[in-house]
Image (cartoon, rainbow over all chains, first blue to last red; front, side, top):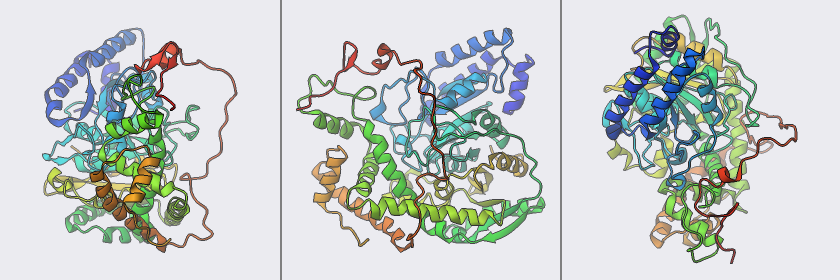
Length: 473
Length: 97
């Protein structure tokens, strides 16, 4: 398997035929997707037509940073003319007439879009089980890929070919599946990557990021995604540059580590930390009580409140699932309620209910507004830590990939508690990256490093410097 | 705030506000689940947030404006391409009454 950079070099030098290569990737997907369900949408003709057009363009001198690179796109990002439903039945059949900015950017650099990867409905989940298509973990078919970008991480781990995935995280939907599938990932600072064309979950939390076989591959894709986009007013000016890292001070929050019950998880994490320290970096303990104790509750309050308003637009009109309005007996409220009840899944309904409740008159200040104030305190705790250290590090997840039979036994609150490690940086909009730390009972575990706002370039450079051959699949 | 007890009446009211139809069975399940979730959320009651400003974004952002000029509008046929509920150049909606 060659890296993205080497692949592009091979294409540019005429040593790799894009058409031959993507045909092999298509063979692989056709052979395995019926078992693994990593793709919600895949069509060989769609892929091959892109490759043929690109080869014609290359003969005319076309260049690009991702020339011929196979890129998968999480289902929640719009791809022109391709069903884009964010894993939800309520968007069945929706074919956007535009590309998300992230998709347009990789296309402009010559990438080949493979298809749409499977996910929890609207990103509502940590195990990718809240959807019709449940992606299976390449390490063990009885286990979850993680969520919600489960298909993206699963295919990144499974494929024998050069590939990178555009994913999305609201509360950990990139770091979690990357950890469970033993691949590398980056969730950027909020606003660094345009979200135009993203089927949103929670506006103040959503971030588009990258999953790949290695940090070098993650870097190749991330570097073309960044920057201000006038179509997304929350996007910011940012350009990626390879940074000199030097020796860093790494903070480890013992408050958070204390909440991880599985000693094997901590053991694998500390072994990787020892390796990092052996490279000359300094490791110190940092205080992190607020994020450790309150992070999950604050996150879910805000996420569900925002999700309940975002999902209000899905009502069986204009696009997505619908009924015949001519034959429907009842008024518009009856129609909207009927369609929403028929097509939203169980977890989506639960989050809409909770989110609606915490915004209702009489409860808003006590729940939603209070959570927004608590978020300020959690962000300040991060800022205080970053006055002493360059980065923070802890295990990406408090567990390795669970079995589906184990997930089925979890209550909603137990499900949400699994996000203990991933919600703090997501809540604060901070960049965080993961590489594989090692294995617990032959299952991978992610090593997560968190940086201050807008240190994404330095973070990527640091992660590349501590990722060793064999960390990821 | 004090502990909120979610009962079937409150669940039905929330579902109505959220434009969701809920069966009797779903109401019973949601009463339990919402009580569990809200009980978990009450954890943040112990945080002192007096004199703390809310963070509606992860960091302070400036409002962004663009020139108020007409750009490529979406063509009517394209706008209507994702629905069967249409008539002429319009979306066809459910009845008001």
